[in-house]
Image (cartoon, rainbow, N blue to C red; front, side, top):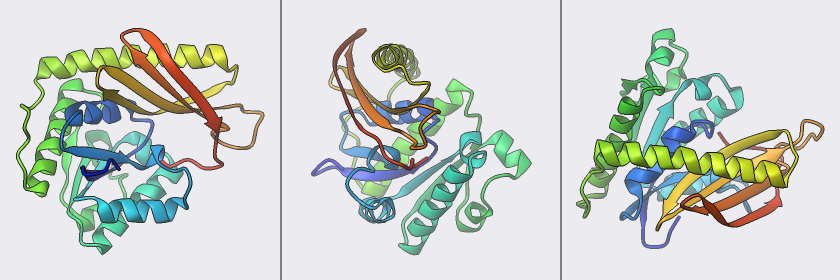
Length: 237
């Protein structure tokens, strides 16, 4: 968490890169920042780190998509995160994909703990609505006014296009550098004219998931900086 900034905890799947990127867009250069556990796992027991992050956050925002409910690992982490937030008395907001809600495949714990809103995670307009709602509710929880106007639909559409372009540039760059066969983007962050994209890359011939972690910084359509470091044997989300 950035010093002197209030944070909200996002319970989510790291595979939902569009929702992650849009959330980063609506909080870019603001007084509140979103915390994505999947990008913050180095150097500490993940359970301890998540408990501490939820404790330090002003609220938990859960995004329940097919990528959450169809992956046992991710689903278990989301249930754990929501349970921790409940135990600590944190405010919990939840959005559930319509198909997931109709099939009633979401964790039943959510229904017992909090109300939820439905949305279509494949529809850009509805994703825009959700991330702006996250932003508005976060500022209400913090008891402060956002000094900037709510991003317009056009700004979010333009940001989404730029985000997708930056991800494609990053993926091609990494695959050219490392001839591994599995890649996942874990976060996409706009930062002062840059796109900071992080992810994992691994090989099916290796047992360790995320055998390397990578970061790429892009300005415009140009990679200006990149780095690799050893991966970890587990993933969050």
